[in-house]
Image 1 (cartoon, helix red, strand yellow):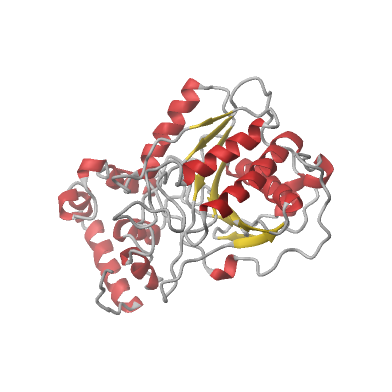
Image 2 (cartoon, one colour):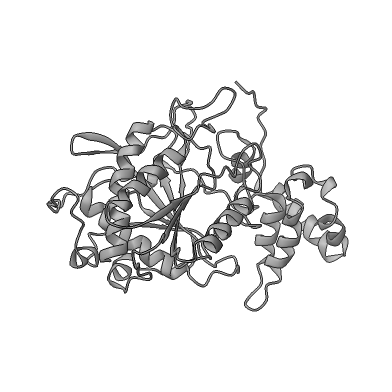
Length: 380
């Protein structure tokens, strides 16, 4: 059990620090800061994090478009939001995953809060499907009433996206789906390896086991996939998204037919009393882990021309999943960060359950989600 010292940080203190930092940058000291990673021990040049400083500059001075605001740049440098003092607690506490700068601007997906978890399954009469039957095109394009947690300034309508044309079309004659894991060692309640908190390199117990089931479900409908189980987050967590992007590019070079990239994760949250977040629904008399689809955007002025296509496919998957297994989906999460989703028109990050769920609950969920993904890709 780790021990913590209590400390209080107010917005006034943080603003003072940020104003001082901004003044230093404007005076020319910023160049020395960016070029002297040894002065910032949070980053280790040995794992490639030295590139973070160059990317902060690049993100702040993009080629075309508006630059990042001073607040965004300060947030990247100090690692938390100066307008939200609680965020420094999240960065320091071991119950939250450490932040990253996604593909050189990796940002950690924030742990779920109870407010984004549906309190009950939809009251509509479920659509009756025979075994292995997929929702039809007409069913998928007519939303059952989808919910979204939108962290961006973009105004999106998931119901309209469900009826929009499918952004990717499969030919079913080559591998067209890549399943991979940026945080490969994420595991579930009771499966962690000794000395680690909810992580294991054993593919039978981490998110790789979930990716395998999704791949198997897709194959039932003629969709061929590549499941890459390369570990990106161990022994070093920092830089996982950068390493994951290398894996994505390597697979796309080897298999030019890839149209869809599924980055399969596990969510996590620990309450003040030490209990873990468990997200589940009763489906056909069984406890099934709920799923959250996470979508990135170009809100941070990073190159991401396909985010609306990604979101359209996600809306169709979300709707298909609710038709197949009402109550299985948490609200879709639209984020400012990119999360390596700029590579294809069909890139989606999936949070399969949470650290309070068992592997069996998540495996059941993977069967339903694999079916929903197939439905969206074939009938959406």
